[in-house]
Length: 99
Image 1 (cartoon, rainbow, N blue to C red):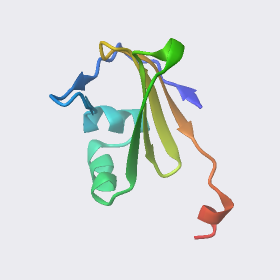
Image 2 (tube, rainbow, N blue to C red):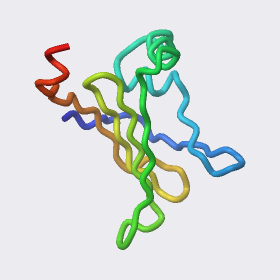
Image 3 (spheres, rainbow, N blue to C red):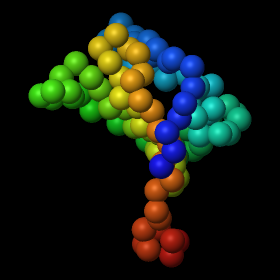
Image 4 (cartoon, helix red, strand yellow):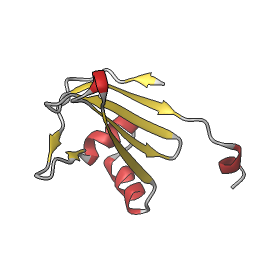
């Protein structure tokens, strides 16, 4: 796991309240050119998840974007500011490795 130490990041939301994650920002987090991430997205190889905080985490969200064995996660405050973010290289399962 690698903590990402970058300039402050504030994420925008659309009219429906959904977080907007610019491809340029995500590609930089993964260490790829933007076009590489866009290609993976077109091929259906990028998955995302949004989890709303409960209890002491109420008002925060955890955003996760996974592509292959890499996962970027961020904890986002109610105002859209990213509190923490990290990039993980996840172990491949034996089932995946056999393919």
